[in-house]
Length: 208
Image (tube, rainbow, N blue to C red; front, side, top):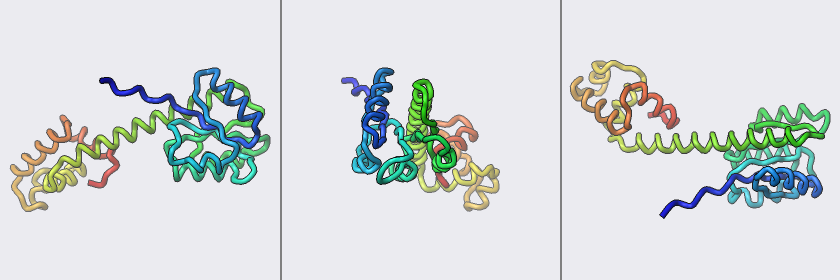
């Protein structure tokens, strides 16, 4: 049996103006994007742990929690949801703050359909890149987890570029034993060279 196809990403639209929410949902829907709308930042955050993968389009000026605070909250609680900030005229300074806090892009009102679609597509591409990066990191961590404690002891100085003789002296084992462990490390990690091992460790984000 085939695995079910992944659901398409969702554009989460957060704006306290109902007409804006409706028109933006219609625009994005007409280009094949699934959407969900929220009348406030609090509405989105109420279900933040169950958000469908995708991105968020957030108005910066809203009653209650503003868009900048929402973006900063999402950066902590749902970092896999890239955010596009929608600003009014002369709010560039606020948009810059949002970008520094991790927003993907900002759009000034009045925006064109082309501007909005480009920003959403960029955010969804970033989401896909982030998912692929997380999947690669998880796979790398799992592969490193197959090593024995002694093999990890050898891995640490290997990725630092230590010669086998220095590793052997430091660990109190023979250079031949280091060679055996090195060979086992490469085989278990599925790497053909030390360069591939280093890349794998960096992908995993581990301090081995």
